[in-house]
Length: 127
Image (cartoon, rainbow, N blue to C red; front, top):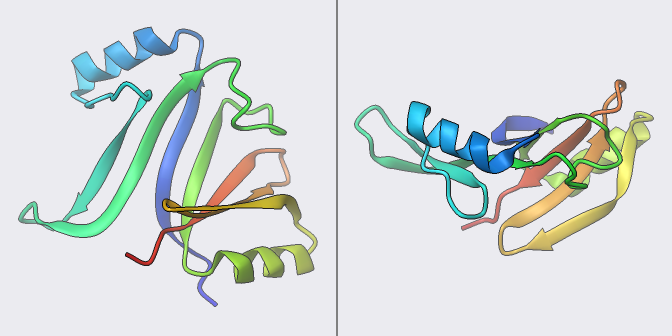
């Protein structure tokens, strides 16, 4: 079974999220949307879409999105078969959170790494 196939997103907390949004927009040209992040569509060398997106988000310092981790960041990894990977991780003794979210955006599950960081696993929708 293939495990991680790529990075689906990078999320981090900021003391002053609106100011940081503005900084990234002004200085790095990231098109920060009202939801606090941006979506980077994957393209080939000619700029043609190739069917993938990486999400990027700055959230507020008090966000509970990364709980139970106290880290100021979370990485979202793309996977091919979320349920099989979570079962394998659990059988290997990993701290798998007992929750799976399924929506039109795909399937999401989480595991806590040995240093207490919440790791998000994402199986994109088939389309």
